[in-house]
Image (spheres, rainbow, N blue to C red):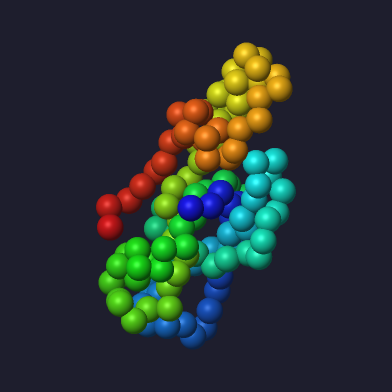
Length: 122
């Protein structure tokens, strides 16, 4: 799983049949500071993430293919959740006020912040 920011939508006149009816978004993986890390990825978005929202994406191709219902689909990336920015900001302020020298990895920080996932039933 990776933290990423939605940078745009994908529009295609021709695409694999398994992508029919699915929203595809361009997700830029980011680090703890929100800076780009690595190459942007195209992910299936069943949650309706907005432009520039932080999301959690997975590179588990098996889960993506299961979501679209086609084991032969070229799908690899899937938006798993949308980061609740308000909860993250509030918790980040609390953590910094308690320990200004605190250095947490993004995953530990998200877990400590009461990270909220908006998930759909696949």
